[in-house]
Image (cartoon, rainbow, N blue to C red; front, side):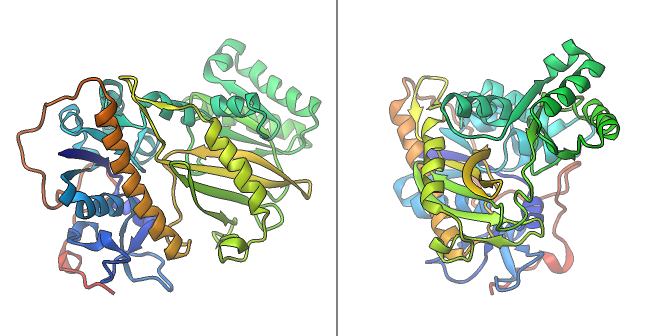
Length: 415
Protein backbone atom coordinates (compact mmCIF):
# COMPACT_ATOMS: atom_id res chain seq x y z
CA UNK A 1 0.00 0.00 0.00
CA UNK A 2 1.32 3.43 -1.00
CA UNK A 3 -0.21 6.64 0.28
CA UNK A 4 0.63 9.90 -1.50
CA UNK A 5 -0.22 13.40 -0.32
CA UNK A 6 -0.68 16.13 -2.94
CA UNK A 7 -0.66 19.70 -1.63
CA UNK A 8 -3.18 21.69 -3.66
CA UNK A 9 -3.25 25.43 -4.22
CA UNK A 10 -6.37 27.56 -4.43
CA UNK A 11 -8.49 26.37 -7.40
CA UNK A 12 -9.66 29.96 -7.90
CA UNK A 13 -6.05 31.01 -8.41
CA UNK A 14 -5.49 28.33 -11.04
CA UNK A 15 -8.65 29.50 -12.79
CA UNK A 16 -7.38 33.08 -12.79
CA UNK A 17 -3.93 31.99 -14.06
CA UNK A 18 -5.49 29.99 -16.94
CA UNK A 19 -4.07 26.72 -15.56
CA UNK A 20 -7.18 24.55 -16.11
CA UNK A 21 -7.08 21.25 -17.98
CA UNK A 22 -10.08 20.51 -20.20
CA UNK A 23 -13.09 18.96 -18.54
CA UNK A 24 -14.54 16.67 -21.23
CA UNK A 25 -16.11 13.25 -21.74
CA UNK A 26 -12.93 11.80 -23.26
CA UNK A 27 -11.53 9.83 -20.32
CA UNK A 28 -8.89 8.15 -22.47
CA UNK A 29 -7.26 11.44 -23.36
CA UNK A 30 -8.31 13.18 -20.12
CA UNK A 31 -8.29 10.44 -17.44
CA UNK A 32 -8.30 13.03 -14.66
CA UNK A 33 -11.95 13.83 -15.45
CA UNK A 34 -13.31 10.73 -13.71
CA UNK A 35 -15.47 11.46 -10.64
CA UNK A 36 -14.43 15.10 -10.31
CA UNK A 37 -16.07 16.87 -7.34
CA UNK A 38 -18.14 19.86 -8.41
CA UNK A 39 -15.95 22.14 -6.30
CA UNK A 40 -13.06 21.59 -8.72
CA UNK A 41 -14.98 22.15 -11.95
CA UNK A 42 -14.19 25.73 -12.89
CA UNK A 43 -15.52 27.91 -15.69
CA UNK A 44 -12.63 29.15 -17.76
CA UNK A 45 -12.10 32.90 -17.83
CA UNK A 46 -10.61 32.55 -21.32
CA UNK A 47 -11.45 29.46 -23.32
CA UNK A 48 -11.56 30.31 -27.06
CA UNK A 49 -11.08 26.91 -28.77
CA UNK A 50 -10.92 25.00 -25.47
CA UNK A 51 -13.75 23.44 -23.47
CA UNK A 52 -15.81 25.92 -21.48
CA UNK A 53 -14.97 24.21 -18.17
CA UNK A 54 -11.73 22.88 -16.75
CA UNK A 55 -10.11 21.51 -13.61
CA UNK A 56 -6.93 22.79 -11.89
CA UNK A 57 -3.64 21.30 -13.03
CA UNK A 58 -2.52 20.09 -9.60
CA UNK A 59 -5.88 18.44 -8.86
CA UNK A 60 -5.88 16.84 -12.33
CA UNK A 61 -2.54 15.12 -11.70
CA UNK A 62 -3.67 13.93 -8.26
CA UNK A 63 -6.95 12.60 -9.68
CA UNK A 64 -5.06 10.87 -12.51
CA UNK A 65 -2.90 9.06 -9.96
CA UNK A 66 -5.92 8.09 -7.87
CA UNK A 67 -7.83 6.46 -10.73
CA UNK A 68 -4.87 5.05 -12.69
CA UNK A 69 -2.96 3.46 -9.82
CA UNK A 70 -5.62 2.56 -7.24
CA UNK A 71 -5.62 -1.02 -8.58
CA UNK A 72 -1.91 -1.13 -7.62
CA UNK A 73 -2.66 -0.14 -4.03
CA UNK A 74 -1.95 3.59 -4.41
CA UNK A 75 -4.05 6.03 -2.36
CA UNK A 76 -4.08 9.80 -2.80
CA UNK A 77 -4.69 12.43 -0.13
CA UNK A 78 -5.91 15.75 -1.60
CA UNK A 79 -4.66 18.46 0.80
CA UNK A 80 -6.04 21.99 0.45
CA UNK A 81 -4.15 24.95 1.98
CA UNK A 82 -6.37 25.24 5.07
CA UNK A 83 -6.01 21.50 5.77
CA UNK A 84 -2.22 21.36 6.12
CA UNK A 85 -1.09 20.02 9.50
CA UNK A 86 1.72 17.90 10.93
CA UNK A 87 -0.71 15.04 11.51
CA UNK A 88 -2.10 15.17 7.98
CA UNK A 89 1.37 15.13 6.41
CA UNK A 90 2.63 12.37 8.73
CA UNK A 91 -0.25 10.12 7.62
CA UNK A 92 1.18 9.91 4.09
CA UNK A 93 4.27 8.11 2.85
CA UNK A 94 5.36 11.14 0.83
CA UNK A 95 3.81 14.59 0.26
CA UNK A 96 4.36 16.44 -3.02
CA UNK A 97 4.55 20.13 -3.85
CA UNK A 98 3.40 20.64 -7.42
CA UNK A 99 2.21 24.23 -7.28
CA UNK A 100 1.48 24.89 -3.61
CA UNK A 101 4.75 25.40 -1.77
CA UNK A 102 6.23 28.12 0.43
CA UNK A 103 6.43 30.88 -2.18
CA UNK A 104 2.95 30.17 -3.52
CA UNK A 105 1.56 30.15 0.01
CA UNK A 106 3.30 33.40 0.94
CA UNK A 107 1.98 35.24 -2.09
CA UNK A 108 -1.63 34.00 -2.01
CA UNK A 109 -2.23 34.03 1.75
CA UNK A 110 -4.36 37.10 2.44
CA UNK A 111 -4.82 36.55 6.18
CA UNK A 112 -3.55 39.37 8.39
CA UNK A 113 -0.71 37.39 9.95
CA UNK A 114 -0.05 34.98 7.06
CA UNK A 115 -1.76 32.23 9.05
CA UNK A 116 -1.66 29.50 6.40
CA UNK A 117 1.87 30.37 5.27
CA UNK A 118 3.24 30.17 8.82
CA UNK A 119 1.57 26.80 9.39
CA UNK A 120 3.13 25.52 6.16
CA UNK A 121 6.60 26.77 7.14
CA UNK A 122 6.35 25.10 10.53
CA UNK A 123 5.15 21.81 9.01
CA UNK A 124 7.85 21.80 6.35
CA UNK A 125 10.56 22.34 8.95
CA UNK A 126 9.33 19.41 11.05
CA UNK A 127 8.14 16.93 8.41
CA UNK A 128 10.65 14.48 6.94
CA UNK A 129 8.44 13.36 4.05
CA UNK A 130 8.06 16.51 1.90
CA UNK A 131 9.10 16.38 -1.74
CA UNK A 132 11.23 18.06 -2.79
CA UNK A 133 12.92 18.41 0.61
CA UNK A 134 13.18 21.84 2.17
CA UNK A 135 16.90 22.34 1.47
CA UNK A 136 16.33 21.81 -2.26
CA UNK A 137 13.33 24.16 -2.23
CA UNK A 138 15.37 26.86 -0.50
CA UNK A 139 18.17 26.49 -3.06
CA UNK A 140 15.76 27.09 -5.95
CA UNK A 141 14.01 29.94 -4.11
CA UNK A 142 17.30 31.83 -3.88
CA UNK A 143 18.28 33.34 -7.21
CA UNK A 144 21.48 34.46 -5.53
CA UNK A 145 22.44 30.84 -4.79
CA UNK A 146 21.51 29.27 -8.08
CA UNK A 147 22.96 32.11 -10.17
CA UNK A 148 26.28 31.54 -8.40
CA UNK A 149 25.86 27.79 -8.95
CA UNK A 150 25.41 28.43 -12.68
CA UNK A 151 28.52 30.62 -12.81
CA UNK A 152 30.53 27.97 -10.92
CA UNK A 153 29.48 25.45 -13.58
CA UNK A 154 30.28 27.75 -16.54
CA UNK A 155 26.63 28.24 -17.49
CA UNK A 156 25.80 31.69 -18.84
CA UNK A 157 23.78 34.21 -16.83
CA UNK A 158 23.43 37.95 -17.36
CA UNK A 159 25.86 40.35 -15.64
CA UNK A 160 24.60 40.18 -12.06
CA UNK A 161 24.97 41.87 -8.67
CA UNK A 162 23.40 40.29 -5.57
CA UNK A 163 22.61 42.01 -2.30
CA UNK A 164 21.29 39.95 0.60
CA UNK A 165 19.39 41.64 3.40
CA UNK A 166 22.27 41.04 5.83
CA UNK A 167 24.67 42.86 3.49
CA UNK A 168 22.19 45.70 3.07
CA UNK A 169 21.78 46.19 6.82
CA UNK A 170 25.53 46.02 7.43
CA UNK A 171 26.22 48.49 4.64
CA UNK A 172 23.44 50.92 5.57
CA UNK A 173 20.73 52.18 3.25
CA UNK A 174 22.56 55.15 1.72
CA UNK A 175 25.76 53.20 1.01
CA UNK A 176 23.76 50.26 -0.38
CA UNK A 177 22.05 52.50 -2.94
CA UNK A 178 25.40 54.08 -3.81
CA UNK A 179 27.03 50.64 -4.14
CA UNK A 180 24.43 49.46 -6.67
CA UNK A 181 24.59 52.64 -8.76
CA UNK A 182 28.41 52.66 -8.81
CA UNK A 183 28.49 49.00 -9.89
CA UNK A 184 25.99 49.63 -12.70
CA UNK A 185 27.96 52.62 -13.97
CA UNK A 186 31.42 51.02 -13.66
CA UNK A 187 30.25 47.91 -15.58
CA UNK A 188 28.48 50.09 -18.17
CA UNK A 189 25.20 48.20 -17.81
CA UNK A 190 22.93 50.98 -18.92
CA UNK A 191 19.34 50.10 -18.10
CA UNK A 192 19.09 47.44 -15.36
CA UNK A 193 16.49 45.33 -13.61
CA UNK A 194 15.93 44.55 -9.92
CA UNK A 195 14.35 41.24 -8.83
CA UNK A 196 13.57 40.10 -5.29
CA UNK A 197 15.04 36.88 -3.95
CA UNK A 198 11.95 34.77 -3.27
CA UNK A 199 9.82 36.69 -5.76
CA UNK A 200 7.10 35.12 -7.89
CA UNK A 201 5.56 35.87 -11.29
CA UNK A 202 7.35 39.21 -11.78
CA UNK A 203 5.98 40.63 -8.51
CA UNK A 204 8.09 43.58 -7.31
CA UNK A 205 10.33 43.48 -10.39
CA UNK A 206 11.40 46.93 -11.56
CA UNK A 207 13.58 48.49 -14.28
CA UNK A 208 15.89 51.47 -13.72
CA UNK A 209 17.58 53.83 -16.18
CA UNK A 210 20.92 55.14 -14.83
CA UNK A 211 21.07 57.79 -17.57
CA UNK A 212 18.65 59.66 -15.35
CA UNK A 213 21.12 59.29 -12.48
CA UNK A 214 19.41 61.39 -9.84
CA UNK A 215 15.96 59.99 -10.54
CA UNK A 216 17.25 56.39 -10.75
CA UNK A 217 18.95 56.73 -7.36
CA UNK A 218 15.81 58.11 -5.74
CA UNK A 219 13.63 55.38 -7.24
CA UNK A 220 16.14 52.70 -6.21
CA UNK A 221 16.23 54.10 -2.68
CA UNK A 222 12.45 53.85 -2.37
CA UNK A 223 12.45 50.41 -3.97
CA UNK A 224 15.01 48.96 -1.55
CA UNK A 225 13.31 50.48 1.50
CA UNK A 226 10.00 48.90 0.54
CA UNK A 227 11.12 45.49 -0.69
CA UNK A 228 13.88 44.57 1.73
CA UNK A 229 11.25 44.64 4.47
CA UNK A 230 9.63 41.53 2.98
CA UNK A 231 12.32 39.79 0.89
CA UNK A 232 15.65 38.25 2.00
CA UNK A 233 17.63 39.92 -0.75
CA UNK A 234 17.73 41.52 -4.18
CA UNK A 235 19.21 40.63 -7.56
CA UNK A 236 20.33 43.35 -10.00
CA UNK A 237 21.03 42.50 -13.65
CA UNK A 238 21.84 44.22 -16.87
CA UNK A 239 18.65 44.61 -18.89
CA UNK A 240 18.49 43.13 -22.39
CA UNK A 241 16.57 45.24 -24.85
CA UNK A 242 13.19 43.71 -25.78
CA UNK A 243 13.93 40.64 -23.64
CA UNK A 244 10.81 38.48 -23.49
CA UNK A 245 8.81 40.97 -25.52
CA UNK A 246 8.84 39.39 -28.97
CA UNK A 247 10.52 36.85 -31.21
CA UNK A 248 13.56 39.12 -31.57
CA UNK A 249 14.60 38.39 -27.99
CA UNK A 250 12.34 35.65 -26.56
CA UNK A 251 12.49 33.97 -23.18
CA UNK A 252 11.93 30.25 -23.74
CA UNK A 253 10.53 28.23 -20.84
CA UNK A 254 11.60 24.59 -21.04
CA UNK A 255 9.88 21.84 -19.04
CA UNK A 256 11.35 18.57 -17.74
CA UNK A 257 9.77 15.66 -15.88
CA UNK A 258 12.62 13.93 -14.11
CA UNK A 259 15.35 13.99 -16.76
CA UNK A 260 12.90 13.81 -19.67
CA UNK A 261 12.34 16.91 -21.77
CA UNK A 262 8.63 17.67 -22.35
CA UNK A 263 7.99 20.92 -24.25
CA UNK A 264 8.90 24.58 -24.56
CA UNK A 265 6.94 27.81 -24.89
CA UNK A 266 7.43 31.56 -24.89
CA UNK A 267 5.09 34.32 -23.75
CA UNK A 268 5.23 37.92 -24.95
CA UNK A 269 4.37 41.04 -23.00
CA UNK A 270 0.88 40.86 -24.48
CA UNK A 271 0.36 37.33 -23.07
CA UNK A 272 0.61 35.68 -26.48
CA UNK A 273 1.97 32.15 -26.10
CA UNK A 274 4.05 30.59 -28.86
CA UNK A 275 5.73 27.21 -29.16
CA UNK A 276 8.83 26.35 -31.23
CA UNK A 277 8.49 25.46 -34.91
CA UNK A 278 10.12 22.10 -34.11
CA UNK A 279 7.13 21.33 -31.84
CA UNK A 280 4.41 22.41 -34.25
CA UNK A 281 4.38 26.10 -33.34
CA UNK A 282 5.61 29.27 -35.07
CA UNK A 283 8.48 30.41 -32.83
CA UNK A 284 11.82 30.22 -34.70
CA UNK A 285 14.43 29.48 -32.03
CA UNK A 286 17.55 27.22 -32.07
CA UNK A 287 16.01 24.34 -30.11
CA UNK A 288 18.98 21.98 -30.43
CA UNK A 289 21.21 24.48 -28.66
CA UNK A 290 18.55 25.46 -26.12
CA UNK A 291 17.89 21.81 -25.26
CA UNK A 292 21.60 21.23 -24.78
CA UNK A 293 21.91 24.21 -22.41
CA UNK A 294 18.73 23.45 -20.45
CA UNK A 295 19.67 19.79 -20.04
CA UNK A 296 23.05 20.84 -18.73
CA UNK A 297 21.31 23.11 -16.21
CA UNK A 298 19.15 20.21 -14.99
CA UNK A 299 22.16 17.87 -14.81
CA UNK A 300 24.18 20.31 -12.69
CA UNK A 301 21.45 21.07 -10.14
CA UNK A 302 22.11 19.65 -6.65
CA UNK A 303 20.84 16.10 -6.13
CA UNK A 304 17.59 15.57 -4.24
CA UNK A 305 18.42 13.90 -0.93
CA UNK A 306 15.71 13.29 1.64
CA UNK A 307 16.41 13.91 5.37
CA UNK A 308 17.03 10.17 5.90
CA UNK A 309 19.66 10.12 3.14
CA UNK A 310 17.49 8.58 0.38
CA UNK A 311 18.40 10.00 -3.03
CA UNK A 312 15.48 10.50 -5.39
CA UNK A 313 14.95 11.64 -8.98
CA UNK A 314 13.46 15.06 -9.71
CA UNK A 315 9.81 15.64 -10.41
CA UNK A 316 9.41 18.87 -12.42
CA UNK A 317 12.03 21.39 -13.47
CA UNK A 318 11.40 24.45 -15.61
CA UNK A 319 14.45 26.20 -17.05
CA UNK A 320 13.80 29.67 -18.46
CA UNK A 321 16.41 30.66 -21.04
CA UNK A 322 17.11 33.93 -22.76
CA UNK A 323 18.07 33.26 -26.37
CA UNK A 324 19.86 36.35 -27.67
CA UNK A 325 22.09 39.16 -26.47
CA UNK A 326 22.58 42.14 -28.81
CA UNK A 327 20.88 40.25 -31.62
CA UNK A 328 23.20 37.22 -31.46
CA UNK A 329 22.30 33.75 -30.18
CA UNK A 330 23.80 33.50 -26.71
CA UNK A 331 21.60 31.37 -24.39
CA UNK A 332 21.60 32.33 -20.71
CA UNK A 333 19.69 31.19 -17.63
CA UNK A 334 17.05 33.60 -16.40
CA UNK A 335 15.03 31.41 -13.98
CA UNK A 336 14.89 27.87 -12.60
CA UNK A 337 11.71 26.56 -10.92
CA UNK A 338 10.59 23.26 -9.38
CA UNK A 339 6.88 24.13 -8.96
CA UNK A 340 6.19 26.16 -12.10
CA UNK A 341 3.19 27.38 -13.96
CA UNK A 342 2.67 25.20 -17.04
CA UNK A 343 0.71 27.69 -19.22
CA UNK A 344 -1.86 24.94 -19.60
CA UNK A 345 -4.41 26.89 -21.61
CA UNK A 346 -1.89 28.30 -24.08
CA UNK A 347 0.14 25.21 -24.99
CA UNK A 348 -1.24 22.54 -27.38
CA UNK A 349 -3.36 20.05 -25.41
CA UNK A 350 -1.45 17.07 -26.76
CA UNK A 351 1.76 18.30 -25.12
CA UNK A 352 0.02 19.26 -21.87
CA UNK A 353 -1.85 15.96 -21.55
CA UNK A 354 1.32 13.91 -22.02
CA UNK A 355 3.19 16.04 -19.50
CA UNK A 356 0.48 15.73 -16.83
CA UNK A 357 0.37 11.94 -17.21
CA UNK A 358 4.15 11.75 -17.00
CA UNK A 359 4.16 13.89 -13.84
CA UNK A 360 1.61 11.55 -12.25
CA UNK A 361 3.67 8.48 -13.14
CA UNK A 362 6.83 10.15 -11.83
CA UNK A 363 5.15 10.94 -8.50
CA UNK A 364 4.25 7.26 -8.05
CA UNK A 365 7.76 6.19 -9.09
CA UNK A 366 9.42 8.60 -6.66
CA UNK A 367 7.19 7.47 -3.78
CA UNK A 368 7.94 3.79 -4.36
CA UNK A 369 11.68 4.51 -4.58
CA UNK A 370 11.47 6.47 -1.34
CA UNK A 371 9.68 3.66 0.48
CA UNK A 372 12.19 1.14 -0.81
CA UNK A 373 15.21 3.26 -0.03
CA UNK A 374 14.53 4.74 3.38
CA UNK A 375 15.98 3.03 6.40
CA UNK A 376 12.80 3.00 8.49
CA UNK A 377 9.17 3.21 7.43
CA UNK A 378 6.69 4.99 9.66
CA UNK A 379 3.55 3.03 10.43
CA UNK A 380 1.64 5.99 11.90
CA UNK A 381 -1.63 6.58 10.06
CA UNK A 382 -4.62 8.75 10.66
CA UNK A 383 -7.57 6.73 11.90
CA UNK A 384 -9.86 7.84 9.14
CA UNK A 385 -10.85 6.79 5.67
CA UNK A 386 -9.51 8.67 2.72
CA UNK A 387 -12.31 10.84 1.32
CA UNK A 388 -13.70 9.62 -1.99
CA UNK A 389 -14.25 13.27 -2.84
CA UNK A 390 -12.11 16.25 -2.09
CA UNK A 391 -13.33 18.22 0.95
CA UNK A 392 -16.01 20.88 0.28
CA UNK A 393 -14.51 24.26 -0.49
CA UNK A 394 -16.02 26.38 2.24
CA UNK A 395 -15.11 30.04 2.36
CA UNK A 396 -12.01 30.51 4.47
CA UNK A 397 -10.62 33.82 5.60
CA UNK A 398 -7.75 34.85 3.38
CA UNK A 399 -8.14 32.08 0.80
CA UNK A 400 -8.80 32.86 -2.83
CA UNK A 401 -11.99 30.91 -3.27
CA UNK A 402 -15.64 31.04 -2.25
CA UNK A 403 -18.27 28.34 -1.75
CA UNK A 404 -20.16 27.34 -4.86
CA UNK A 405 -23.80 28.30 -4.50
CA UNK A 406 -26.86 28.82 -6.67
CA UNK A 407 -26.47 28.00 -10.34
CA UNK A 408 -22.77 27.15 -9.94
CA UNK A 409 -23.46 24.39 -7.41
CA UNK A 410 -25.34 22.12 -9.75
CA UNK A 411 -23.65 19.37 -11.76
CA UNK A 412 -21.75 20.93 -14.64
CA UNK A 413 -22.16 19.30 -18.01
CA UNK A 414 -18.98 18.26 -19.82
CA UNK A 415 -18.37 19.93 -23.16
